[in-house]
Image (cartoon, rainbow, N blue to C red; front, side):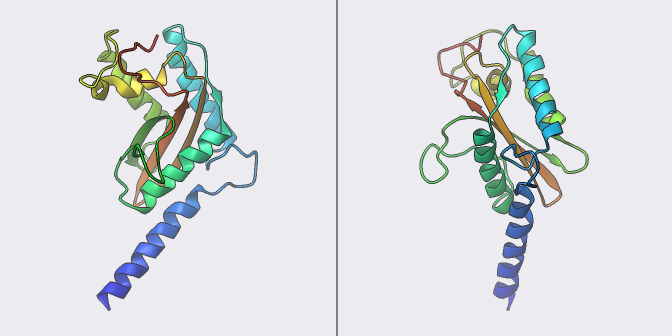
Length: 178
């Protein structure tokens, strides 16, 4: 009996998290985001890029679909912040930034602001395995070769999960972002 209840709860959680990410049929942007949210995300990203003299990025609905798939996966499984793996069904093909916060309190602007705050740690060094964890979200945000972004969100268990993907990816070991 307990096993049946747990299975039922797991199915309900999966449906409530994954269905949230479906397109609303208006102005298809590739993810749950509204066109206004897309404009705000692009403005936040491009403001940070302009501060260091980097060209703006444009929106990719293909990357947004990719981001929404991972956001839904995170929301329907552990709800933990885990980057896509380097192999298998969920293989990482693009740069990626993740954010989680209390739904209704944190939103998309908070995600970009959190990544951008890492600029205070970044000192111009090339990215390597010993430093990428300290400022890798920021350097991905401003990586000079990145041209396209796509982001998504999902609400689950009282949290909002934000996933942004970047193409071409940044944080290339041994290189600087600009």
